[in-house]
Image 1 (cartoon, rainbow, N blue to C red):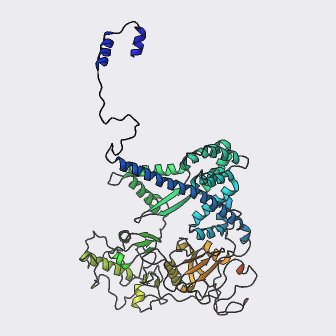
Image 2 (cartoon, rainbow, N blue to C red):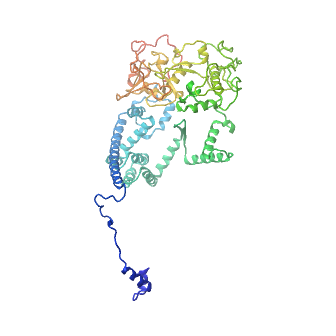
Length: 623
């Protein structure tokens, strides 16, 4: 401002300017004794700010540690590149020509072939058993092993410049995954251009920023690739359950964005239509979703019955803190009791009904009508409608039993309700699909050793595993015992629920019996692997373990999960092979269709011998 004014009056100063100049000419400035010009080094031994030395030391040390982390990050990128090259070479050694043709007995079923049509294109020429071998070797789930193998094959075969950048440490594995996910789908004539353009600008970008840039490049270069990607994404719609902590889980649905937005908006409108209460909007939306799915009869849809398998210790139902399981997922003890109360199996805590007055909705243990039971008894003898002599009638108290830490009549009512539940003869009017079973568990190993019910106990049935079945398929009690004992597929890392598993004979039937110690739960894919995958071997161990050996010689052993824990730690002596269990099961060791029968195992016999004459041919194997 002053400069502009001076140009207007160049010949003389204003009065204000003359006074200001005189004031500044007469002023004297004195610097402090400890003054240091900006940027000067501090005086030796002097600390300008308290704690400055410690702060400087922490900054320096933190920089050193971060440098080590950056070096490890660089090494991880180079190691990821080496791993990708090794896995791609492994895939070339496992061609799909090793698999059985679709027309051959024992090949994948039609449903499996349909699922195979949705396999990533990178694995169409790779054996269906290659992913399982990677999963065992790297201790990954099947989904993670499949994704890793796909990325490795695409990176090596289609994106050599990206692989080189990963070797140099210019990008991370996450960046490489973005390139395999988006750029590898481009045609051969467009892919090098997109790859070079993105890699030239990758410096300083996170993998999320690279994904946005890659999408834009793909859209510009080849719109048809994007259309095909959208079609493939729509084919991949699914519903997935992710177990969480504290008995909670995430139920996610992969949908097209318009459909997902419409569902979300509909749930919001349903929730907003509910009268105001203490629940948040999010809680009301979840409750509306549950009601729409689990109560379809109230909305004009045919009702269905959800099936859940609850496994809990008696102590849990009586008040202990031992967690239980719902369909194989761990849930807290309190949630187990809440579920039992919601299903009417136990009295609610706020129910003040006297202990000697049974509720109308409780299961009765007295004489029943002629209505047939909805569950089979645990004995071949039919159940009588008359109560057993030592069985209390409905409404009688159970003496001498009390809930630990919960004294009083409420605890006695819980014990009585549980006793009536276990003594129930009819399931009419209850929420149960089967009568509750009582499992006897080895306290040291945590393994199931017997399965019965209260009626079987009062009849004096021996405690132990169910007897073996004469045919290929196990009888109902044996089937339920094995599924409850294993509780998931017994292949390493597979957590398929037993309801969707086959019961596999460890020693092939008919040379091996249909018994609890020769049966195990395997999902259909791993059941076929145990018999058909070339180079794989499965051997049963004396303590109930399964020893899997991959074609590369890696050995992995699984055991039934322990009750009260999720591990499958073996007992002493469990690594001892079971007698007569060295039967070849898979690949080239087994004959193809029309080439004879498997070599015998129990009892020994000459190769090519016919099945034992006393073995019933009631049900053939599934393959």
